[in-house]
Structure formats: structure tokens, C-alpha cells
Image (cartoon, one colour):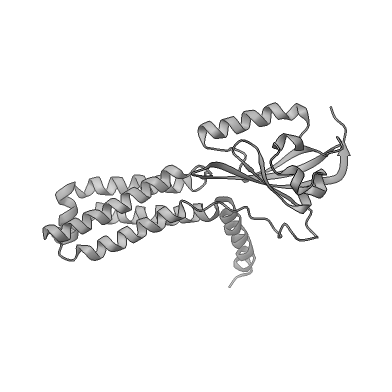
Length: 266
């Protein structure tokens, strides 16, 4: 193996790790479903003529031309591959689940109609696959940090807030950094952590995510100014992630102090 190949391996691994941190578990699952959907689309679009009479293909063709099925699978795959990089990925999960469930039901029905006597086998597989995707859609997106938030060597404050910007969880590092105890912080608005001049922008951002379902800041390191309980300001770096559930949007922020010094209000 050449020196260039050896040197490139750590870079490749770091790139893969960075992508996985960016897209999370949900995104990785969408990537798998997207690539699989593209492969299925190709198999339907380029079926050899002598195989079109096979029970599985004949059953699908009796409902819609195979090219139509190929387009549907291709569109679903493209949607999954696009939304794997987005924090709002519910449309992709819904589309993939619906298509897999429909495929499973079609296969099951083909067993009862006699078109595909062994269609129940494929139907069970497709329905199980669809159920698995539906289960993944309920997963919260975890925030990945370089060290555990409880590590003494890591001063990161980890804060969880709901879609209205109300603090729901607060680790000891956050209490130390901002001066509010856990009991005091939980239930209060995130605005206690920021100077008044930034609160309007914060409220507008929450409203935008609530209406569009998308956060342009998710996964990025954002330089900001924090507000201590005693009124002093200090430079911080914030990494925020959001996930969607039936209860709405939930935010997790990882906050680290920058430079260690306070800043004067403008």
C-alpha cells in the first residue's frame, strides 16, 4: 500500500465520522433506505424481457406499469437522500413507510388472488421493513459530543428545551456556567441565558422553526454571547440540534465558554 493511501485512510475515516455526526442515526437510516430504493427502481426499470412473466413482476404490472413503479421508488429514494441532511425529515420517513407498507399489502393480496402463490413471503418481509422504518421515525436525534457531558475535563453545558424555548433539562456544567441551579433553570425560558438585545432574534428563530419545521443552525458551531445570572456577559460557542416528535420540536444545545473571559454589553 502506498504512503498516500495510508495517509488518506485517517482522513477518510474522519470524513465519514463527520458525516455520521451531521446526519445522525435517523439520517443514516434514510441513507440506507434511499440507496435501497434507488436499487429497486433500477431493477424495475431494467427488467429482462424473459423475467417480466415471473409472478412478482406480473403482479406489479397488473396494477401499474413497471416503469411507474420504478419512478415511484426513485422519487422516494431521492427524497430520503435529500432529507437525510435535514433536521426535518418526517416527509421522507412517511413516504418510505407508506411505500413499503403498500408493497407488502400488494404482495399479500397477490397470494389470495392466486397471481403470486408465494407472495405472502415477500409481503411479510416488506411489511416488517416498513414497520422498522416507522419505528426509526420515532427515534429522537441524539447530540454527539466529543466527551460525555459529565466529564470533569469537559466544561460543556448541555441544555434541552421544548419548541416554545422552555428549559426541560439542565446539566451541572450548565448550572456552573450560567449561575442557575438545576431546579431554578428547569421551567424557565431560554431567554435567561442571553442578553436582552438577542431575545427578539431568538423568538423569531423559534417561530420560524415552528412554522417550517427546519432549523438552518442545526449541527453548526455558532459563536454567541451568554448571560450569567449576575448579569455579566461572556463569549460562548453553541451547537444546537433539533428533533421532531408527536409533542413537537425539542432542542438540545451544547454550550462551551470561549476564551474564559467576560465581555462588556454593547
